[in-house]
Image (cartoon, rainbow, N blue to C red; front, side, top):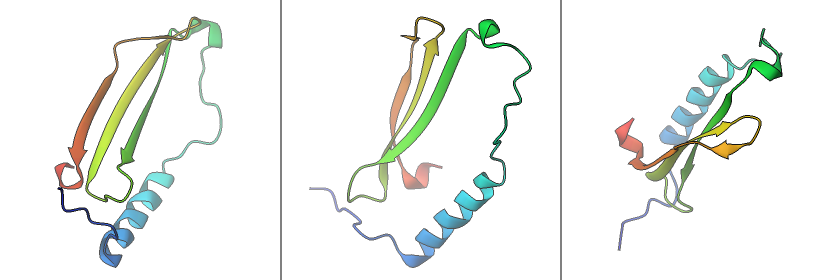
Length: 85
């Protein structure tokens, strides 16, 4: 059985907070899209999720949808470990 790290260290939690603050500084809250919605062909999203109770192993996903049908285009998922970054 894998050795799960149930409680990340305080230093690791602080590092995560600092990374989130850095990313938050780049957050765009207003619409900057100059094209109309009719001009868009695709919309996509990314996510990274850690396995519950494990602060090391995660899964990253990228999904792209075709507009207006919302048909899922070829997407990617990959397992990763926190130290892979």
